[in-house]
Image 1: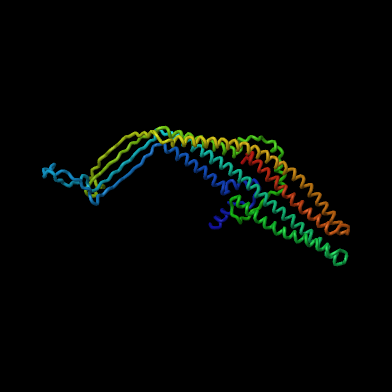
Image 2 (image 1 turned 30 degrees about the vertical axis):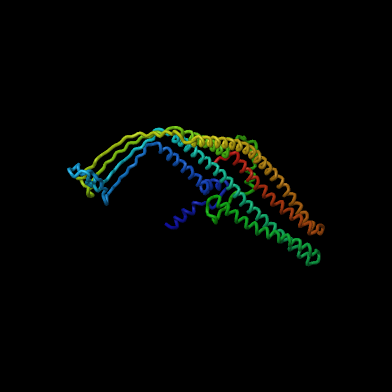
Length: 438
């Protein structure tokens, strides 16, 4: 049973992910995504909580009293035939009593309740929009984390290959130098390049480890979970080149930030309605019924106990009359807040139009850079190969070879980065256009 249980839990977290599988997994398991879903559930409960305040409310109460020292009242003695001007001490209630009562309250009219119902609906909509925004951010974060892992993996493979080639060149150059056919500087130049590459290799190893940990955090799994990414950087890059996206509709109404700003405006409108509702009267009704029992001893649980019933019906109206300008000032403040929200909505609209144009520009540039860096890499590879041939033929110097190698390493890193940029910039554009389909 223990082995079977361990196997079951082991199946909960996949060992390998495509990019889409990683996104789907994160949308269900990322901690921010889960909390955003809980916020929606809380908003739904709050909506019902607000609704229930206008529905019948029944409350019960049971009171038990025991006079440890009974309160005494004084009556004129002449009532009982005593001497005038004197008083007789008497007690008017039994030593013990029990009162049980139930009260039904019903709100008949309250302007703030009506506004509260509308606000609860808007609050639920805000929570749903916040969940959508969180999902978009999680999706983009997963894409970036996935791309960073692939970038580190590809970079490490290239560095390892470069070191392998360089070690071979250094070994051949050292033998040529030992035979007196090359200068010592040639060996030293290659040693400098090799040392730099080995140091860079160590750094890439650390970046790779951190990238995997960041990927795990983004997915919502354990930091040290062993995960395997099955997509390649190049294939993802080619899949994410979509010129049609550059012609996508720039309508900002679908943008989640615009919708959130619109929610903010509606919220301020409701707050203004709430302040105006304070000028209106409120009306409520109640019905209560109960029983009371009295005795000198605690005999309330016996059949001999007598109980006296009572019932009351009432209606209550609260009418605001004068508040020294407090309600008026609050209403004016709410109007100012509404005007601010309208200006912020306009600002958000203008900013989003700019952000969409900027995101399209960045995505187009990333595609162009990818093509450019791919061509540059091909050129750098040919230049390095030519200089390597010339160096061993004694035509080129070690300095020329080192310069060509450095140029090649830079071109390799720029090419890898350009592939990552295509993926990341497309995700950024999709997020701001809200064109993602889950």
